[in-house]
Every structure is written in C-alpha cells, then in structure tokens.
Length: 152
Image (tube, rainbow, N blue to C red; front, side, top):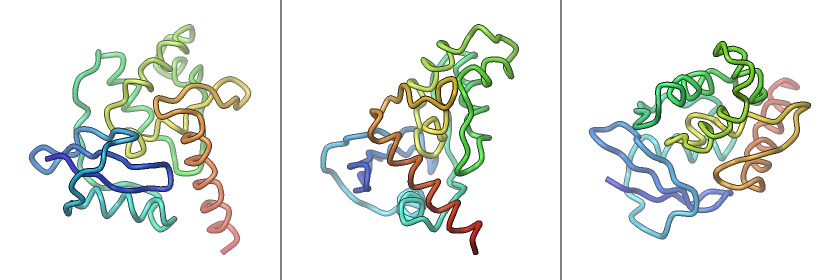
C-alpha cells in the first residue's frame, strides 16, 4: 500500500507492506491519504508531539554495511546529531565516512530512521537524499522542540 502525507517538508510517500513501513519518499506525487499508524506518527512528529517513532518498519535492501549504518542511525536520539566519521569509526572502519554518507542516501525509511541527524565533520550541513533544505528544516524542528521541552 502506498500512502501520501503532506508535511512541512513537502509531501511524503509512505510504502507499507504487511503493516510494516518499507519506504518513505520525499516529494511524492499526490495520492491516497489513507489511514495507517505511520501517518499518524509522522503527523505527530511534525507537530512536535512525537520524538520517537514506534511504528514497525523493515529496512529493505542495502548491503550488509548499509544495513549496519541504518541500524546505527536509528539509535541517534531526537534533537542530537552525529558525524559520518563517528558512525564509520563506531562500525570499525574510520576511513569509511563517505561510505556512511552513501548508506544514508540509500536509507529506505528516512525521517523514521533519522539520517537527517548525520552531519559532516565539525557539524557541517552536508549531504541528504531529500536535499539540504529539508535536512535543515528537520534539524531545526527537532532543536526547537528539544529546547522547548528542556525549558519545561
């Protein structure tokens, strides 16, 4: 089943198979809105009401290395970032920062598996399959909500 949700970063296509989210695509063409917990959670995320997705997903495709990167990305806390190099080092290959970037670009479920939280050395805003403007908006949303929550 393919669904589309409007969001502050443009329409998102959400592919669901057997109740598992198997794909999220930026800039999806208009299509059926439908009902699915993933759409509810994405709406709550963009409204600043959800900081951790619980919708079940499946990481389809990718090499063993890419799946390892996606698994690490899924652990990055809301409102925080990590560098491509730090992920590469954590996976035991400090020279693989560019390969981590490529894996991020191939992430089948962006936003839910938050590849937008991976940044370049020194926190530089580099690379994002959805475009840097979308990445900036996602990071700004999370920073704003995280700060508001910390202030109570």
